[in-house]
Amino acid sequence: MTRVTMACVPLLLLSACGGESDTPLQKDNTAEPNTPTTQQQSSDCGANFTAERSLNQFEFSSVFWHAESEALQPKPEFRLYADKHSLGATHTLSSDKAPCMLAAAAFGSTSAETWQGASNSSFKQGELYYYAPELIFNTPLPDFTSLADWRNKGQPDTISQPFDAAQLTIHYRDQDNNLITFGNQNTNTTAVKLTCNSSTLDLTLRVQSVASNAVNKLDPAFCEEKQVGLERETHCLSVGVNQDIGLENCKFDLTNVILPDQFGNKSTVKVAGILSFSASNATLRIDQLEL
Image (cartoon, rainbow, N blue to C red; front, side):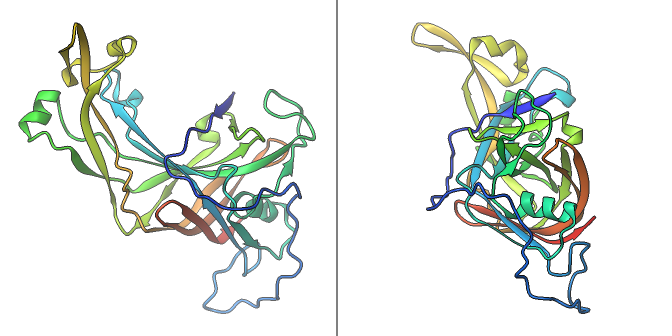
């Protein structure tokens, strides 16, 4: 199965000059020799391996309480990823091992790669594509049992909810800026346990109107009918991640990551690094890699 995510209008967008490169990634033969010391992290790709990538696209989603099972209940979500405007990328690579070069391409380059697998509905053989790292933060729903319960508790418009991990996916991205993965989520996405300056995200709650064709999917305990002019409308409690996320930096220890290659094959490596935030951008830096 192919999953294609259409890029949405950005809520926060990094402006930069320049463009993507259509030159495939190559080994950095100019890297200075770097003899490991007791202070340096060891790496199967050389002690001096690093990769850094700008995640310029921030998106926030709000959800309603659903009538479906907990497993199908969507969660408030903060999503960040690299789209075609992500121009900040760099890497240091002194190894010509294929997994090392693949990791450098995914986490530290905006260069185009060439699809060498069989032609399919997403890529034709010889077509150019790019790599797009994505991280998704989500939190549990606030502990309210109904719209009345929310009101009885002072109807707060902001509440903090904990998180301890983010979902990391390395997508293919085509030249139309579509994010593409092959297979199901379990074969593309891994959980990254984070240690951040804050362990919570602020959520915004509000009552808003719901389209009539979506009402039957929602939990009626969180909804009410209102007279608006001559019409009766259904309004329900919604919750979403506040755009002022309050995150500054997050660290993660060695974690499995799934890397897709130019043939559509996938391999798993372990990476460790830092995710740092500025007002309108985030930077994902990998400073340790094990094959």
